[in-house]
Image 1: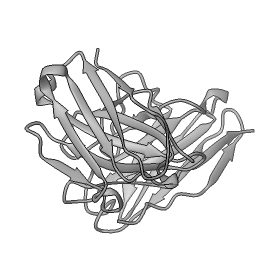
Image 2: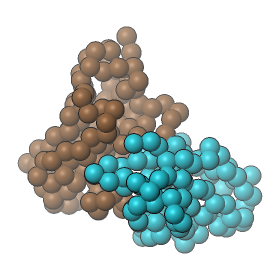
Image 3: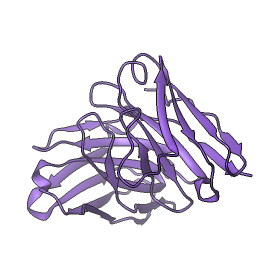
Image 4: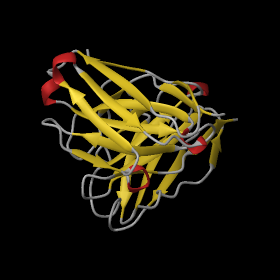
Amino acid sequence: QSALTQPPSASGSPGQSVTISCTGTSSDVGGYNYVSWYQQHPGKAPKVMIYEVTKRPSGVPDRFSGSKSGNTASLTVSGLQADDEADYYCSSYAGSNNLVFGGGTKLTVL
Amino acid sequence: EVQVVESGGGLVKPGGSLRLSCTVSGLTFSDAWMTWVRQAPGKGLEWVGRIRNGGTTDYAAPVRDRFTISRDDSKNTVYLEINSLKTEDTGVYYCKWETNVYYGLDVWGQGTTVTVSS
């Protein structure tokens, strides 16, 4: 199972919006609506920000949103804030009880 | 509130073995599906495997031959045993509680660090 493809980096100024992509195949992202997005600050455990493509856990600001088209899922962070600077990872159910992660995107708030 | 706490990491020589523990509170543990994820230094997240309620396990292909996940429901604990440790096994090992069979909304522990070095 190959890792999902994410851009290594993304950036935006405070208040702007940024979108991070996550590309897989029809065997993972394209085949199931079970894509999640995680935020990881340095030295901390990942925290789920989006699950099942578009759902936000309680406590996650609505500035975070998810979507999917074909084999590519996307995370959009609007109204960028300094604390949004972190690594972001996507994951997808990949069939046969397997899970696959993306390589991660470092988001920089300029 | 569900809490997940890993332990058991440390410095191990190549070829050695290690057993990591993950203790969960705040839920009916016997119903829980638990997943292990690892992260090499400066690298991304890698799915290691999962144990379902009842004990059935699923593993990532690269670790299937050396990693074993088990559980003790009487202790609210899941274990990850790693044999024939390699330097590339170095990293932080996270345990997480899955709320969904297909992965998604979850609760992670803080991780435990494994260093494989001579």
